[in-house]
Amino acid sequence: MRLLDGKRLSKQLLLTLKDEISKTYASSLKRPGLCVLRIGEDPASKIYVNKKIQTCNELGIQSSELHLDAGITQSELLKQIICLNQDPAIHGILIQLPLPKHLNSSSPLEAVSPLKDVDGFHPTNLGRLMIGEAELIPCTPLGIMSLLDENSIEIKGKRAVVIGRSRIVGRPISLLLDQAGATVTVVHLQTSHPEALCKEADILVAAAGKPNLVGKNHIKEGVVIVDVGIHRTDSGKLIGDVNFEEVKELASAITPVPGGVGPMTVCSLMQNTWKAFCRLENIRADDS
Ligand code: NAD
Image (tube, rainbow, N blue to C red):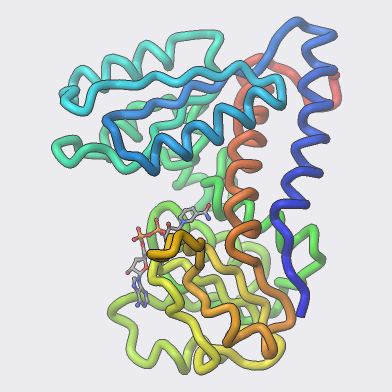
């Protein structure tokens, strides 16, 4: 069984990106700028935002965190987003989810300019993905595709099963796998006989948000497993949606938790910020 090591791959991809950013800065004195909006005091959001800001700093991306009070109104939040849309030093805007309960998440996500939507959640970007003309792709699915590609996992002609159909992970990854030539089945809470469907998969993506949901009864020998879930146990250990111990002898490849999909998600965010910057500043990647 091969481990699909997202930590190692993301390090390698980020080094290449760092080099491109520094060459571009040397020739144009321009740097990509990313602003992360954090609203309220969700502890996990704080950790995720810090990780993103730290990675920006390591790469030479100008980053800022706009931390807004948990009690902010919807209209005040929209005004802040409009200011960021107009700021020429900011090429990427990310709204850290989840938002406090009184805020509706659709309208802030739609208020972000599609050109600066580095999370790829704006309906324009999701629509472009749907028609196969993607510009900015949601980070976790983009990272998964990169991990499969860099590990030479064949997708064309394969049976893929995606567990979960969220706007962030399940739906976009099922589209990307379909566009890469897989025949895709989506399994969700209303699906009958999910285990039997999962057992047909050559590639199984688990994105249900349920710890240890996938065990040996869900898989066939030789399957490639992408475990998107991330959960902290009472003892502080990080685990995924897949029962690693149960499946490791049967699978041909699997992403570990931690160190699989998570680092690839941050890596994709940086790549999207770079992409948005190049587009907004009319820089071709090979100009540098
Ligand atoms: P979500 O709750 O928005 O969506 C979960 C989906 O799974 C829903 O469509 C639901 O219908 C389906 N589902 C739930 N239980 C199921 C079951 N028993 N059988 C079949 N389908 C089921 O979650 P999300 O935002 O898509 O995230 C999923 C998981 O991935 C979470 O654990 C989250 O923390 C993790 N995640 C990790 C990363 C990363 O970078 N590693 C990024 C995003 C999300």
